[in-house]
Image (tube, rainbow, N blue to C red):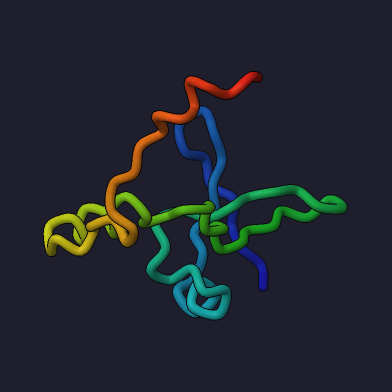
Length: 84
């Protein structure tokens, strides 16, 4: 498929057809990973970073009071006697 490269300000850009975005799993994506590999421009679905959504899940758990300690509180009073 040939695609026109268009001037966008001081840059250049292309418009990707909806079926191509759908086939690549990028139809509803707000961003994509872009790289150049062996002279080809490659777009990929963004990788999910580690711990994505953990903060929201912890907040939701705390709101439901589901964040109580499993073993209860315990102290480290004996630590003062340790030799490091």
